[in-house]
Image 1 (cartoon, rainbow, N blue to C red):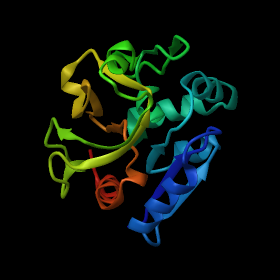
Image 2 (image 1 turned 30 degrees about the vertical axis):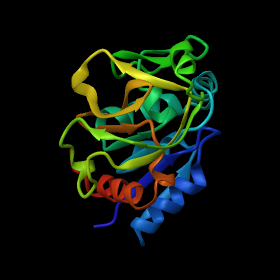
Image 3 (image 1 turned 135 degrees about the vertical axis):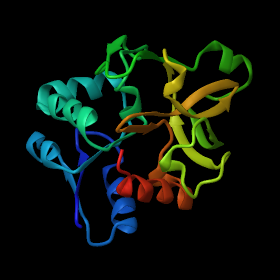
Image 4 (image 1 turned 60 degrees about the vertical axis):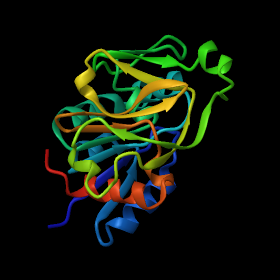
Amino acid sequence: MSQRIAIVDYGMGNLRSVRNALVHVLPGEAVDVTSDPVVVARADRVVFPGQGAMPDCMRSLRESGLGEAVEGAARTKPFLGLCIGLQMLFERSEEGDTPGLGLLTGTVRAFGAEARAAGLKVPHMGWNNVGQASGHELWKGIDDGTRFYFVHSYYCQPRDSALSAGTTRYGSGFTSAIARDNIFATQFHPEKSGVAGLTLLRNFASWNP
């Protein structure tokens, strides 16, 4: 049975690479990049890709009218958030002291003096291991500790540790994937993560939470 997958276009993010990756693992399926709230609302699955700044992201959602459709999708249908698409689900980000959608409890923190004192570069950029903190369906076929590609200066700090579906060490450890009900979101970029990333996207397309 065919399905409609909407990739949210809010004016930033790796839209083309995310779409190309989904089309690769889902030949023949409808994969639409869209800024239309109606298309997002009608989609069977929604992907919110990310790259850029949290204040710009939230402002774009408000001004475009996409915010309500994205929030509705994250409450009711399989929803995959990538990078900023993970961060905006939380209550607040230190980046510009910006309120998020508040669908998940917790904050988004900056890699700060501790990381730099350890000789680590900020942003955290490149390949790193992800330890699977839960036996989630989206990890099917992906070994625990597999490396994924990251580009970020901020990370989420969930109030509820049960939200954590994956962890990564960059100096100290941080939550690099979260899961709750119909939501799965990653700080890393599966569309840039080779075979493992494609496997995760394929798992998302068949996931029935």
